[in-house]
Amino acid sequence: MQNNFPPLNSKFSDKKTKTTIDIINLPVINLGNISENEMMDFVKVETNYYFNGWKLGQERKTQISWNWAAFLFPVFWLAYRKMYLLAGIAFCLGFLLSFITEITHSYISLISELLFFIIFGLWGNAMYLKHAKRMVNAIRVKIQDEKEKSEIICRQGGTSLISLIILILITVITIVTMGIVKWTL
Image (cartoon, rainbow, N blue to C red):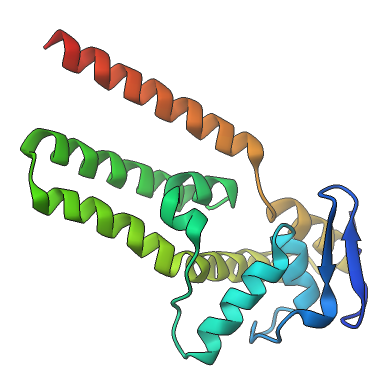
């Protein structure tokens, strides 16, 4: 799959996701040595949303911009966006915080859980930008052929519905298991 994005003065329609990206309105953001087309290839879904969030962060000279999906469902959002290492860490941390809250019935641990969600809401877009830049740069270093590079960026980026479904199943199994253990004690 090669770079199918047109020049930055037109519209792009993705037949697979049935979305239209108004390339004219994509904000100009500092991506370092990564081209906008490479970043669009990587992000694929909700490109306008992420470019606008990243631009807002750069204008404010901060990495903070709100992401509702990252706030409400941080672990699922990370897995959906193919940030698997962070998703694993967040899953374990979230599980640990929930476990501590359940055992201690403490407001402090409940506040810690809330902060966990707020942190992802505030810095989720920045985490994704850092992840995307790292992935695209790694591909750019390894692959010289433009067509192959574009194909790999497209494959490595985007979203993964399968990862999301697997994580939902793991979460349900974990919750059911915890419920059974708690009930038998």
